[in-house]
Every structure is written in structure tokens, then in C-alpha cells.
Length: 277
Ligand code: C2E
Ligand code: CA
Ligand code: CA
Ligand code: CA
Image 1 (cartoon, rainbow, N blue to C red):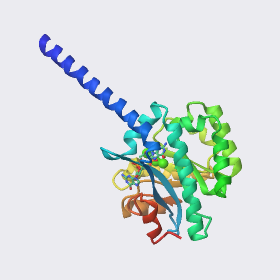
Image 2: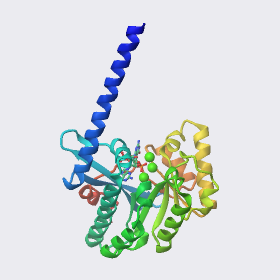
Image 3: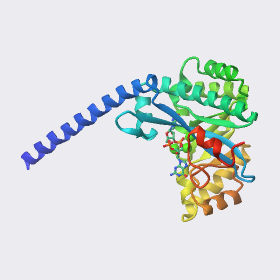
Image 4: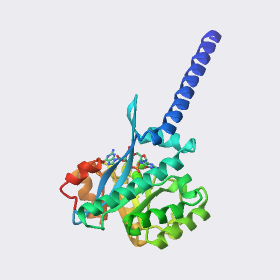
């Protein structure tokens, strides 16, 4: 038994070493990805639930790795966050999304399309973030209302005071703020009163369960009612079926996003979409 144990240990440490090497490589590749222009943004439409009108698009980061092909954000965003690279990558995303807005504006003449961008905690906390937003909006002639920043509950808990202050400064300018993955974090509901936000994004784990699970349906229903009572909009993410859409509509959910309506897509494809202005 002892020998087996030792072998297992050796196997285990080899496995760890391997994982560590892969990770070091991933960080090195990520560091290189920005200058090598391996990142692109795809955009997933969000529709007004009642009218079906295209309201906003969420920018979702895609990485085309030269050897591994497309790497999913779920794999590299956490690594970028832990290695400190998310600052530069996040700044690129924000700049690119604003630039894309400008291009759409020039193509359509319509200033009312909103672009939603995912923020990382380190980005919101970084020096000069507000100035960066100001600069981008001014540079691209983008109305602040056309930019929506998505933040998660957990990232707000890190330095509540500073975060609330920064979010307040952004909101004062007219930038829209949404809490992403709402309901999956640990934040207390009482924070909702003090956070200067405009919308909640109902996490897709709740949305998926509404057809089969009475508990999930009750949670969705309650979150929508709570949000509305607080004067917030509700965006449902991960809407995949007609039944989910019907339920969300019946509960007065404001915006819908999900594969049922549209997948994330490159800008060229989005322009061909029937709902695009
Ligand atoms: P998220 O912000 O919750 O984004 C929604 C994710 O759900 C996206 O995955 C989207 O492709 C996917 N999705 C959309 N509709 C459906 C649906 O109907 N069903 C299902 N099952 N999934 C759907 P994606 O693009 O892989 O992004 C994963 C996560 O990576 C995002 O989750 C976000 O947390 C993070 N992320 C993506 N881009 C960025 C970025 O630019 N900056 C930061 N900080 N995080 C990002
Ligand atoms: Ca998001
Ligand atoms: Ca989300
Ligand atoms: Ca998510």
C-alpha cells in the first residue's frame, strides 16, 4: 500500500508540474496575444422583451490562439485576472467596443444602440479608469447612455466603498451599470439599495430552470419583482427556449439575451441581422 501511495504521489506531483507548466505557457501566450492582435470581440444582441427591438449588444471577448485555435473566455479570463494581464486586456476590450459603436453609428446614423462591456474588478479599481472612460466617450463622440458596464456581485465586495464611489461617478456621467450573473453571488440584498445601478442580469442558471423547476421559477419571478420595485431593469441571459421566453415575458422581464434570439457574432454578421438598424 505504501508503494502505491508513493507512486500516486509521484503521479500527482507530475500532474501538478504539468498543469503549472501549461499555465506558465498560457500566461506567456496571453501576454503576447494583445500585441499579436489575436483578440476579437463578438457581440450578442439583447432585445426589448415586449417589442422585440434590438436594444443593446454585449461585447464578448474571443481569443484566437495560434496553435490551440479559439480559446474560450472561461479558460483565459481567470488566468488574465490572476496574472494581472486583465488590466491591459480589459482596456483593449473597452476601447475596441467604443470604437465599434462609432463605426455602427457612422454606418447607420443611429446613435441609440447600446454596447455592454464586461468589467473586471482590477479594471474598476485601477487608477485612471474613470478618465479612461471619459476619454473614450469623448474621442468617439459616444453618448454615455450608449455604454453599459457589467459588473459581478463578487467584484463589488472587494472594496465596497471605493467601488460604490467609482460607480457613482460613472453613473453621474450617464453610463449605464448592470449587475451580471445576479443571484449567484453572496452579496446581501441590502447592497442593491446603495449601489448606483440601472439593471440586473438574471443569471442563466435560473433562466434555464424555469420550465421544469418551480423553485427556479419562483426565484426568477421574485428577482424581477424586486428589481422593478427598486426601479431597476431586468435582463435575462441564456434564454434558450420559447417556454423560457414566454415565462420571462409574463413576468415583465425587460430585456432578453440568449441563443433562442441570437448567438454572439462578429460585427460583419451582426450587420446582416434582421434586427440591426
Ligand atoms: P457572461 O458575462 O455571463 O456572458 C454570457 C455568456 O453566456 C457568454 O459566454 C455567452 O456566449 C453565453 N451565452 C449567451 N447566450 C447563451 C445561451 O442561450 N445559453 C448558454 N448556455 N450560454 C449563453 P462566453 O462568451 O463564453 O463568456 C464567458 C464569460 O467570460 C462571460 O460570462 C464573462 O464573465 C467573461 N467574459 C467574456 N468577455 C469578457 C471581457 O471582455 N471581459 C471580462 N472581464 N470578462 C469577459
Ligand atoms: Ca456579462
Ligand atoms: Ca452573465
Ligand atoms: Ca456568467
